[in-house]
Length: 318
Length: 96
Image (cartoon, rainbow over all chains, first blue to last red; front, side, top):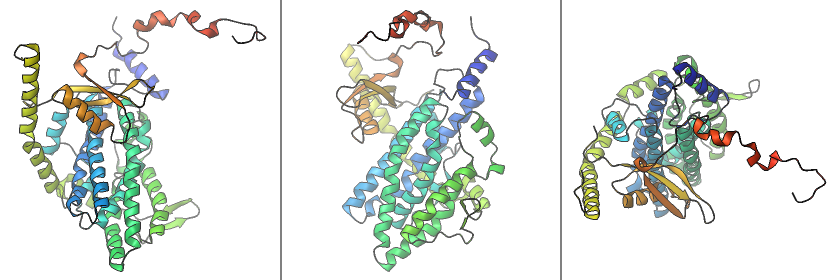
């Protein structure tokens, strides 16, 4: 006898309350499914679009060593996108459909990838700050209530550590180099600091989805908690580099046991999220072009596979 | 309503090292099984995570129904005598 929706909902709530994982074929509230699809798709799109700012520098890497590292890193981003699309597909959506939504500008990706990469120091600063912020966001997602998402995040976090460390090492090499190189690192830090803080999303008072996501244990911390954690972790790293973070309000607060810091420009954040960032149009156009240029490859591979099957089974594939 | 060139879904299983079972690690799309193996190598074993890979068309997997409390598993639920702890043995008896 089929269980009523009320009974199913009770089982779902119990599973969440016991801190167990929800798995793909479990009953789940439609809103939970929708929230996860939106979040995982945005996350996957971010990884895929995130290949572009750094991919920009692969052909101009300063040495073979740096080039090999950067290639491996960008390949990882593609891999992370694939893990996440696979996790989203367990919720009943199709990857092709998500890609269509991305290139039709119907689903978003992280605002950070709409900023340009103007020098090789940006490769280092992205590893240090952008991947550092991503790690802060992603580590708690390893305990997300949805099993496939949590498992994808565990794989991703393991690999992100390489991303952050290669970036920091690159910056160390530069700050120990010439005065011009030190200036490049500072200039890049100045550009990426505030956008990195924005990666945690709007302030808690302005983040309508946070409460429900925390109740469902999709999210484990609020945006402001994670932002604070990131600042606290990053300040000592900036000191070790000898780089100044571009915030006059940044100082240690003995009473709170945390760093105080200034408010990001939330108008800029909203503008970039809604399409007016420096590189939004370029990023989407590039992704659209890559998708369209790959169509014949996807079709040819499919046709070849069908032909092989037909040959093997001695009949024409349906 | 799939695109003309869309590829089927494969589930991927990786043996981490000799002596271990293959374990499900995720899924991917590929035009055929051979491409699925290559994609699985590039996607799931970029850092020596595996010594052997299986790929299986997702649609070829037969699965039990999802609920853990499903009656499907009931036959094993009430057979506590299948576990060694069911049997009381005096503590002084060795090696048992």
